[in-house]
Length: 210
Ligand code: GDP
Ligand code: ADP
Ligand code: 5GP
Image (cartoon, rainbow, N blue to C red):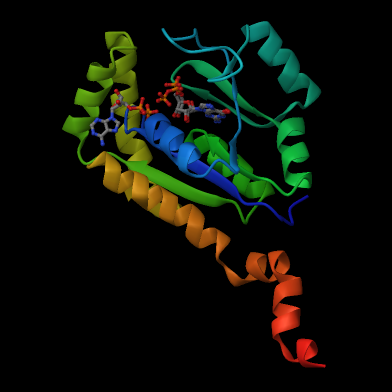
């Protein structure tokens, strides 16, 4: 299933860079892109809804899913387990749907091994100091969790050249437009356009003159 009709977007960012906020804004502007809801063993944050932000599961359930091969990819991130549902992804791709995965860099590498055409997008903060301000400002994580996430951020930024696109989330509106532009440009590529508009171009071409 490595020949894609729909696009797979993989959005990676250091925690606190604004990935979740930007992806939510993108999905509002481009509702035809569907978000993959990951499984996670982390506790739900205030305001997070089971089945919408994540499928929150116990570690024993997560491990059983790994055993059954239910995940396209899974990884341990900051001490919790996260995974992407393989059957959901397969179903959406068979339907020709564009999908977006909001996952960590380890998961991104696993997905690109299966789908080399997946589009990798890295969201970078404007500085480490601003990243720390956002993580603290979000007020959802304990001090120890924040420190662990900041330490990982530098290592993640070292791998930035592996992505197809890089969006710096300094001014939110600018970053939102950048992300939307990536999705729109991808749709306008000639391969997908020729498939989608085959009949229109056939009629406009020499065949239509006969
Ligand atoms: P935030 O995205 O930094 O607010 O924090 P989360 O706790 O929601 O996510 C923690 C990390 O797990 C992030 O790097 C996510 O991208 C990553 N993550 C979320 N879902 C998945 C998944 O299904 N698979 C993998 N591999 N990573 C995931
Ligand atoms: P992530 O999903 O990458 O961990 P979030 O989307 O939760 O990041 O954003 C982290 C915090 O930073 C949130 O409180 C969010 O409102 C804020 N934020 C996101 N983008 C910007 C920006 N461009 N300028 C200032 N604050 C931002
Ligand atoms: P948070 O716990 O703050 O929501 O997310 C922490 C990190 O886990 C983020 O970098 C997020 O992208 C990542 N993450 C969320 N879901 C998945 C997933 O399904 N797979 C992987 N590999 N990482 C995930």
